[in-house]
Length: 269
Image 1: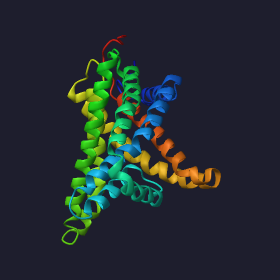
Image 2 (image 1 turned 30 degrees about the horizontal axis):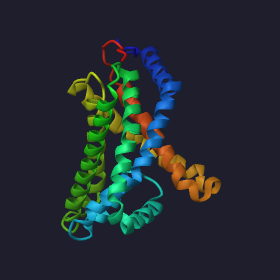
Image 3 (image 1 turned 180 degrees about the horizontal axis):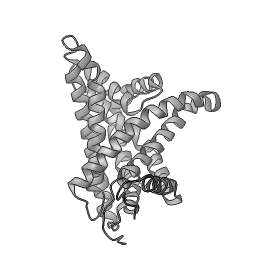
Image 4 (image 1 turned 90 degrees about the vertical axis):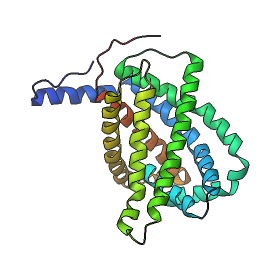
């Protein structure tokens, strides 16, 4: 269990910070977060392809540009490479929706089963049976896709008033991406643990994770520019950056859970 901050004091803060660092850098945590990152990348472009196909069914060109703006907030680097990838996906989206959905269904378990293991380490709990884990993973993937569509719709609505309120339209994508992030974190913390935690715990953990994710996003972009991965990896730099960002984001997910301890025994399957 995590050390409690009773009575305040520098020693308590240092003790908790040291405990958090040990948990985040523990071997099991590193294995789990790497698995989350890999499977996230496996599902990312099939999911984007499905979203592109959906956006093409909407009237006008605002949906496509709004999708790019939302993706730029979620993936805060290499915007030109991301735009080029999105443009390429638009050309093949109509013929690959079914294949993309199958990849998403298969890869979603690789994301959410390790997430379940990570939350077990933080909060305790028991392992679901195989079929139920698959079902929960699929439902969470559907929920994530719906949240992405909602975020795109919010961005389109904000950009519709770009002439009347240019400042509001400019920050519409940022606000919708932040709302999407917090809602997704909340759903993960509320639905994935078995037995489930309460709404209060899930909301607090989602707020911690959402704020931390926004802060880490800017730090990541700054340090990514200093790393100059293009000089080392060449054309693979974008893929390496995506992998690193997915890994850092999975650590933020674990951090949000660790910041809100739950008093319950660690159950096993």
